[in-house]
Image (cartoon, rainbow, N blue to C red; front, top):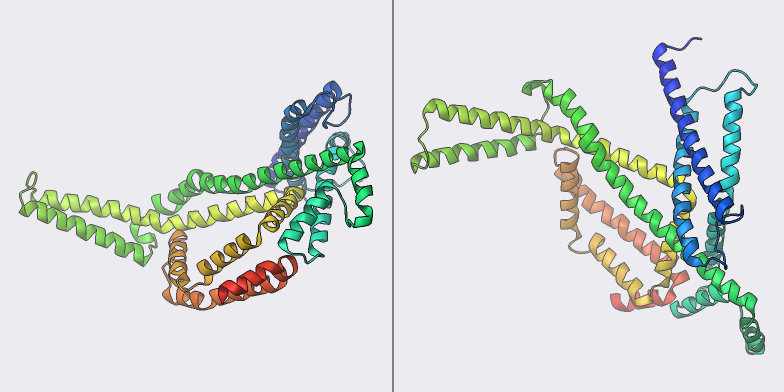
Length: 414
């Protein structure tokens, strides 16, 4: 069955875009390969005792930049390949053979560095598993974590202290400690950089798409080409604009009574009121449709966040493990303070007023009329659910990983 002309053109455009993305990824993989051949004797870019850490950090920044661009271009290529129709022939064409050759070359280059992230995730997962199976106090947990990360000693008794001391003086142990410290530093850099990207990119996309794409389109198709009677405006916005018009009219009358400025004739006064009414009507129309632009921009931002998490799954897992390790590294008093602060903010005595303000701003953000019944129902149910969740978190999480924090929390609540 023949496809429509416009669909064929769309498929050709998608195919061209995906092939260009693959070409860019291929060129960036070639840049990494040139760095390996020129400076690292064809091996992967890694710390070299002859060159020093500063030289490695210099090449590491270029490596991270190229790897990030390769992943983005490969994601674009996979997306275009998903939407483009599959070939009817089972035989490989010259174009498909060229694609496979480029993909093999790219995989041969980036596969070595993907293993580094896998090692980080595996190592961090093993540490989290060991920590979750040992219900120690916070001080004991920190000591155990430090011992495992730096010396890999599971049990230390009086009979093995001499052997541990002998092992600690060996050169192999020193290299293992240095490698572990580099491992932790690399994990921290990946987590912080990706966490910043998760915050900055969705926010930037939300602002840019709303102001440059969605708002102009909405204004053109739903406001500029329609009369005021055809535009559906929220009643609350109408009330606000009527109050503003009444205030402007009363201000003109006061200025006329006090002889402030040049006196106006009835015709001039009517013209000013007409201009103000048209201005307020246009402003009301834009406010009524602003919520639609916010909704679409927020969904686009959420989609960008989901794409980042899907494309960089390994980095996202490292971020979760890094944040979990930071929280477990806090002392018990700090954990209890954070927990009490969150519970008092969201389910405390004064949280109802805060939830009312938040929900009112959300209704305004999406251009919806404020529904008081929904707000009261939400305040009556959601904090109760949240309080149950916090109690379950204490029972299921704190009792296993930080029993001292649970004891401190019970004392403070009493």
